[in-house]
Image 1 (cartoon, rainbow, N blue to C red):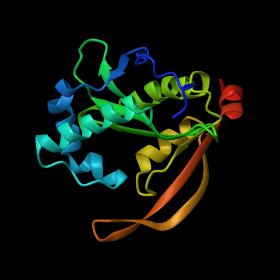
Image 2 (image 1 turned 90 degrees about the vertical axis):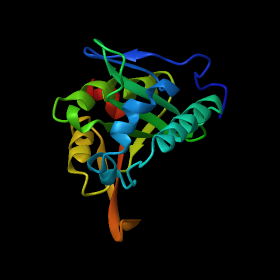
Image 3 (image 1 turned 135 degrees about the vertical axis):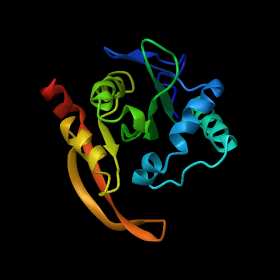
Length: 189
């Protein structure tokens, strides 16, 4: 990853109700609640974590990706407490093409409260303004209706469907490709 990406110190972001900070090893229990829930993990094609050690290893991979400048992940915490209720990240960062992929997840207990619609614009703005991205992508399964609605609400354009792209739990799932371009984001602000 190129030095132009602003990884010198971890960027703490905030929205009206939430803080976005670095994921820490001490977050393992809170993230295990999220990662062990098949209602959360199945819509994006991952088996739920069965052991806390799996979540601890996931956190370590996030920390290593950040230190290697390959990605960045934020823990989403309410401003009233520091326990994570979800995460959002950039990964597959491609400096040459000024492109990155957006990912996110939320504890099921926090669904339906407009949280992603509130925090993702902050993360998107950071990607365009600080990373200098020209394009942000998201690639949910077609059956992930909630995620697809959030992306459309944020201005992402459905650019295509990769039919039966991913094998998950014995079934081939369609994967959707959404894109958001910096000029479109700036016009919509």
